[in-house]
Amino acid sequence: MEHRRQNIISKAFDLYHQYGIKSVSMDDIARELGMSKKTLYQSISDKYELVENVIAYQQEVASSILAVFHDASLNAIAQHWEYKTKIQERFPKYNPSFLYDLRKYYPMLLTKMNEYKLKVFYEANLSNLEQGKKEGFYLEDINSDIISRMLVGNAHFSLDPANGLFCEAEVLDKNTYAEIYKYHFRGICTAAGHAELKRHFNRVKQENVT
Image (cartoon, rainbow, N blue to C red; front, side, top):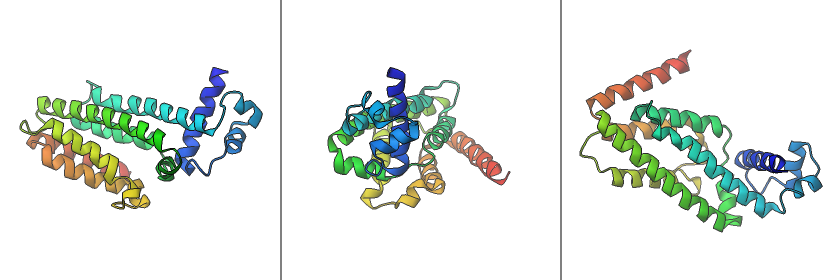
């Protein structure tokens, strides 16, 4: 029963992020899983409960991805590249309608999700900045607390299409994030950090060519 429940939540997570919440019915999820709606409702009582569990599952996914910022085997700049790769792998077809629908139909769940996101994103960025300073890649005199809060605000507000700064296509465009990375790193890196940053950008360019 528990295994089936987790499969339902995982499938709903994928479908909601690909198509939005409102446009995906319980029938759609049951069909995708090859089960009857009656069987689905034996594990999940209604759509609200399913969305609530999808949010909890998303928090688990976010924590597993953000764990890269505590990986001692990677330097601070490499952590960001690994994070970007994991995000693109886990959310290959992200649809901003997911956030629109949460805001309109499940505002309390959105608030809960945002509170969690603000906390874990702040902690991850703070850890990364402090590590980068110790490694000599980031400037020692930057205020890690202020920059961490700014980065969280940027992800929380600027990259939400509902706020009008970036359209959906731009939010999904890798070039948008490349420019944000350049802006961020060029403001906090030492000469050694810039050299490491250049090495990563050159590697990405080479991968795109091949």
